[in-house]
Structures are given as C-alpha cells and as structure tokens.
Image (cartoon, rainbow, N blue to C red; front, side, top):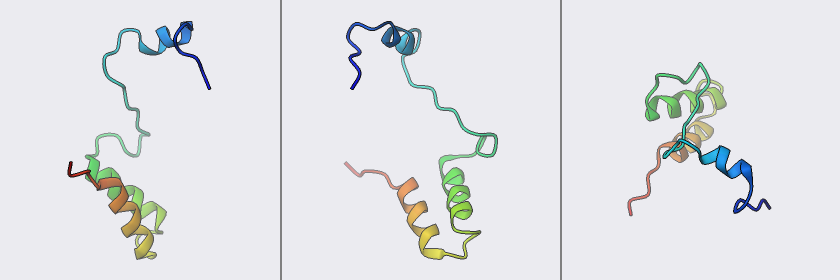
Length: 67
C-alpha cells in the first residue's frame, strides 16, 4: 500500500494533467474501441478458431454498464 498524501510521486503523477492518458501499442493505434476489441479477440482466439474465447473476450471489452 502506498501513502499518496505526502509523497512527491503523487505530485509527479498528477501534475499538469486533468485526465489520464492512455497509451496503445502500434498495432492498436488509430483503431476504435470496437476495432481494438475485435483485434484482441481474434488474436487471443487464434483468428476465431476458438469461438467461445473470441465471444467472451469481445463481450467483456465492449460491454457497457447500462446504469
């Protein structure tokens, strides 16, 4: 557990940014959320051979909480 109340790392971590920055590997840059989910699901499921793995990963990545 890290105490962030009095460390200089907390200042460095939050200095100058109001939102978090997301970094993607070169393979996923420029793709939409759906495109990244499809690519990740295809990669993990051996290009769709394991359809249940593809389905599970795709569902988990694109699912949105309806609340």
